[in-house]
Image 1 (tube, one colour):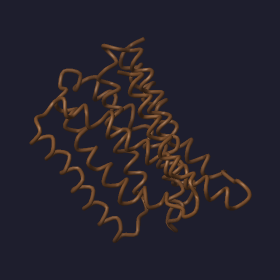
Image 2 (tube, one colour; image 1 turned 90 degrees about the vertical axis):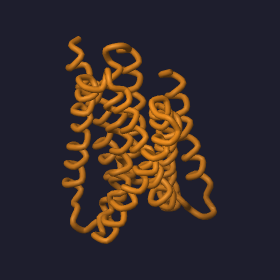
Image 3 (cartoon, one colour; image 1 turned 90 degrees about the horizontal axis):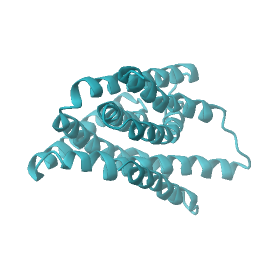
Image 4 (cartoon, one colour; image 1 turned 180 degrees about the vertical axis):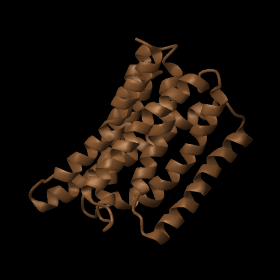
Length: 237
């Protein structure tokens, strides 16, 4: 298969679970109410665990391979500071999109990496796409549950936003294939910047939403999310 077509299809399959997660969140109903509440908080924690795994096992290590300690730390910290400024602006405007931003900060660098590795390891790219898809499903679920609380955002509008977000993946994969295959330092810099942004959002917005007193499922959900990242990284390395 043509590498451009393969990169586009794999990234699209990895991203299609974003709107799918939104659809599941739209129709999800569990009874009794306490179980529904614990399930939702557990999915939020699962997504947070997957995001931390992406930072700790994929994005940050890849960037650390390309930079010395000083530049790596600066790029990582810059990502966190920029996301803090964005988060403050969004808070003032009352726009609940922290989970969506965290998801894109994870999905797009991984789609870039997906495109950059296709020419040298097509089987590894397929596995990477499958793992990205599994991460995007709970993250899409969480982002929908957060955004539906905004009075200006209807369910249809949110799902259209998610569909557009999924289409950004193939574009990123093609950029990775065309321009970053021979530029690992650029991809490493993007990965470190995104890592700082994701880590800020996990502790500022995602983790607080997952907390549920006198329930232990959400904390275990975070462990399961990190386990997904751990196993995935071991399978692809």
